[in-house]
Length: 351
Image (cartoon, rainbow, N blue to C red):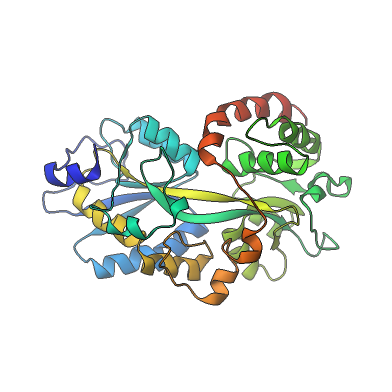
């Protein structure tokens, strides 16, 4: 049911599915926002959530920190008949899965005017929500260990760093993206086959320290547990700033790919009107610019005007745009289960 219709009809409540949510009183305008934990939560609260609540004192936002998009999707599935979350952030392929399962309301500019200001790439065919952030995959490295500074993804296959590599594996989108990049640099086209990517990552696997770096790959390098890793530009930029030279992020010569985080209104949420107001704010130019300035995610609102220095460190700079692999994430969503199956059979067995 579109969010515009829900704004007129209201939404039903439900029994609590988790202990971290309080029952909503009739006058209560509290919404629960599920997004990423750690450094994302810290910066998103400061740049967006707190200013929103100051601007809209009648609406309170509870931030539920999820471990990953997959974990959030699992929670939304479990709560389908009695949702306790109003708004959720997921990577675009899992947002497509949730849309197909009827978990999300369709948005339109009549209900959320900021939608009309978004980049065309922010609205993905077959996905109910809209892009909250754009980012790109980067190679992470320890400058004190990896010399000279790497310029190619192929350093991940360098035997000199065997046992010193940390990558979040499939089904995490970092793992999926690593397969796509490996496929590209070995002459493959993901639209027809990812065989070359799977084969290449399988060859890399014996040199990988972990496919499940905790708390994340950035910390593995900063703490000296790994020399190389794969991650996202925004987090790489902000972690490198505070690492004292222990971490650096680079866009390799072969290029990279964009990653899209979608924001979704949960079907059957208890606060449809407050949800609409919140979505319009976080997709608006002011909030988008504020988060780019704070954490270097590229804005999805075409009217956002972040600072020039911050924008230059995002995936939106002309030099980076020229090196992006054009990925149709809806096409990737259709082959994601196959990638996961091949990963389990051919990559995880190579240890």
